[in-house]
Length: 425
Image (cartoon, rainbow, N blue to C red):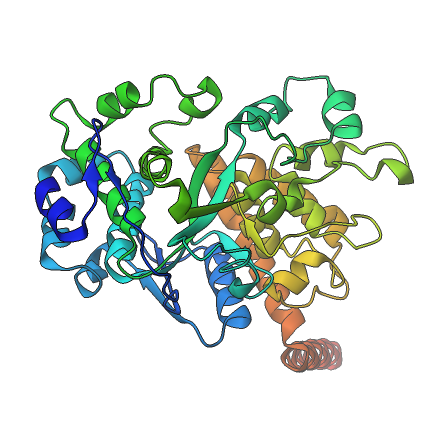
């Protein structure tokens, strides 16, 4: 396979088996957006994120892949690999790992743009695709300083060092350190057709998956020497490591932008409105449950947020957004409403008190397996669904209210007549 790739593309294989690219003329990125979701139905955060793609890029074709639709996007060779025992063993590690296989297989074959289903767009993709391109790159994406990410991490349930993390430094990630060793991310990247780097990335990924020692062990050995702040995320970021291998041997053919400035700008977040007074207990509760997303749900004057052209939702962010939508714990002039075009808040619904408390309570227990909590959250959501239904249909609510009043009057008058008849008798 490696020899055939070398002969057909004119590249070479180094000692690590990574293909380096020959010079090639740039080509246009196909106007196709691919993503993958393992099992429907989509959570609200996913549906709303994909809606932003359509809103910002109406001329782009969007294809949401599932395990049952891969045959429409992959050739026979790629399908055989995805269905191989080694790939199925990787799939058992989780949907994220299987998605790592799918994204590189699809884009190496077709080109286009990959977006994780939890990426929201606030501007058209042409604000970054092709921007500052030197003309040689065939793969564009984002990278991240993982050492800074580790330094900014804090266990908000246990740490008392709030001043250091939120008031002085905040949770914002900065991209200004020129000495930082940055690693690529794979939740958003654009690929030209027949991109040599994408094919090298695919080969590096396949080699790890097919390793007889198993994917996790092979990945652990191959990543030795990389910063521990990055390795701690493996094997979750296995696809990122394979891309790093391909990009390292083809530096002139890739263009990575700092994710801190483009997709994580909303993390420049202070948990409580300190300028307006002391923090409330609610602020502490929301801040370790997707706090930046709760901040985006507040009014502009309370949370002067800055959001980049795209916004990558982390796991807690996604849980927070799903809960915020379910309990409508946002206000109409908040950035979140503008980004996701959320329905207007109920006029009488206390979104900043009751709504946010309910949403924070659920987001704080994201992914819980506790049956009691699962039932509690289901009851809370169903109750709010009924409340919001009547709020969204005022005419029906008024009609039902009048009908109820008339029925009450009818039965009251009927009861009086019966009582009067008994007295006369």
